[in-house]
Amino acid sequence: QVQLAESGGGLVQAGGSLRLSCAASGLTFSTYTMGWFRQAPGKERECLAAISRSTYYADSVKGRFTISRDNAKNTVYLQMNSLKPEDTAVYYCAAGVWPVIGTSTGYNYWGQGTQVTVSS
Image (cartoon, rainbow, N blue to C red; front, side, top):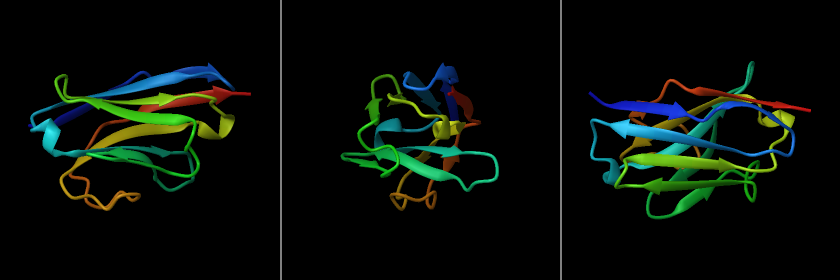
């Protein structure tokens, strides 16, 4: 059974940093593209970053967020710097074999999400 478990969310002041982790089990981690997404209340789910052999970033987080992975630990990370109140959302990780980069299409597995709240 595939499981993705996010951690590292919380409350932070604007300008601060957080590092999210997503531990995967039950899949051959290195063969999957991993993505980070977020969804704020009343808004659509947004693809923030993805990593396979290369990386993708949405314009909204480029230069502030960094995605990385440790295949030995079956874990993907999202380092978030210079956080803004508009970054407040539930953050999800996802795994896909052939996802459409920049979208949520093609991701096979999803975590339960972790809340990130940025206060002004």
